[in-house]
Length: 90
Image (cartoon, rainbow, N blue to C red; front, side, top):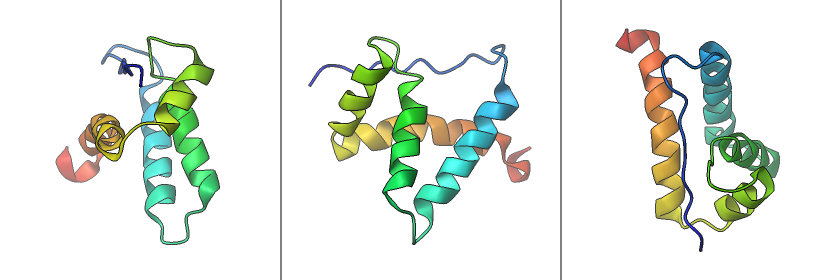
């Protein structure tokens, strides 16, 4: 499998609240007991925007082929961003 390089937005990148709102929405949808395949499709689409070393379509394929460990490592980076936004942590 080709390497997935994730480029997270910097603290000065525009769209901070939009990104974080989307992360929180996706987290909620994916963790719901009744989450369907559409939630996973949306998550893959979102994550593929941040893969910097291949096209968006290639990124989606790589993400679909990722191991459990690789996938949770990628999610962990985005969860950290969401945790920083959580009012309990401010």
